[in-house]
Length: 84
Image (cartoon, rainbow, N blue to C red):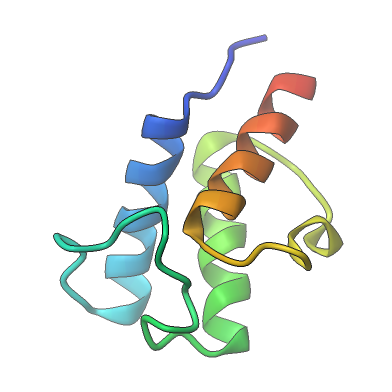
């Protein structure tokens, strides 16, 4: 069991976001929301799913329903990764 750091999760999410959205992520912060950055609901689901796959974390998408920004998503993934 390895603990997933918030920094690694954030960097992975930014990389996945850049790939899916074909966007520059240099200015993306934990306070930003995927929606505000232009990701529609399908994009957001794809970004979260791919990020979890790359980090070898499996969580139900319903866990992300209350996430308001990227920081919330990162925290949820990190918590789930620790429970593995």
